[in-house]
Image (cartoon, rainbow, N blue to C red):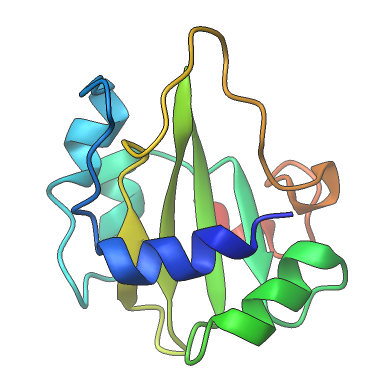
Length: 131
């Protein structure tokens, strides 16, 4: 479902731009992320995440993370209005190894191409990583 995100986030490292140059408040905050930032510092900057995909999870998103996300232990996702989600990737030390500012694709309506509901921070066994 989201194989492109692991690759896109690794390639972009927060530098992808939308074709229509729309920028959300969250995307502007994500522009301030730095390589090696701690998970807690990223969450302090962006707020609590909406989804967490851990490499040990089951399901398509976790399988893609294991396949494409070399060295990535988990990803946090933030809903980003009409634009693609902001995604931050973390290694085993909970340090940021890459991110996607959510600028690459903005629609005319709410963006709904997100991880499955069992990755929701409200229900995931890994929800402690979201806050």
